[in-house]
Length: 248
Image 1: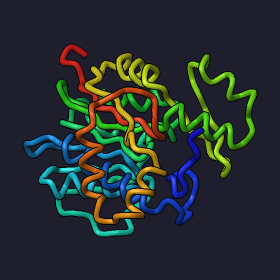
Image 2: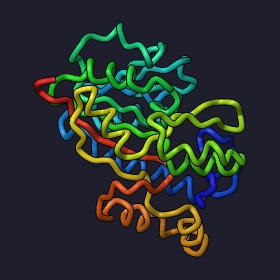
Image 3: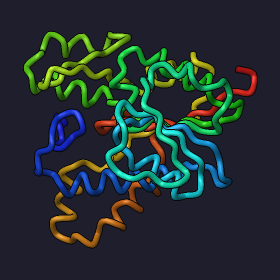
């Protein structure tokens, strides 16, 4: 059974598995770097307090509008504009006004009516524009339920169309399987390019390798990025890329 990695964004700031989270964020940065448009583009970042995504895109030469629920506590790059607003309602943005949208850091799992958020993302994307997003996986949701001894709820997960899972801190997360996520994106006028786990390597494997050889981080990240893409429902998070259909 998958255990919840400490320092998971929804769990807390425990210091165990620190090496895995170093690896995790390095993989996320590398995936974003590969995904970003090659030409300077106008990008909307909805990832919230995880400022690393907006900053990375801006430093790569893109113009970024980031939507956050509170002002930034750190300076922002010159190409970044911060808007304090609710990411669920993007009515202040014109239709088709962005070349790309980044909805990372489990943003879609934290907003439980995910359909409304994805519909807004599709609305502000230009035809042919792309979105990169991440969500909590069903694998993670089942692990949380098991650790809290919600065995009756756990047995219902495979048959459920919507899976809402309580965290120990009282918050709720919405978890997705590959087909659930694909269906959601398709219904909102987006064509799925790929869905994959954030990392296929397990936390225990990463901890073991980096514990023996800290300099192996670069090789581990490269191995993750060059592994055959698979939409098998493994890992705690799913990452997806989708494009807005021209006829949507």
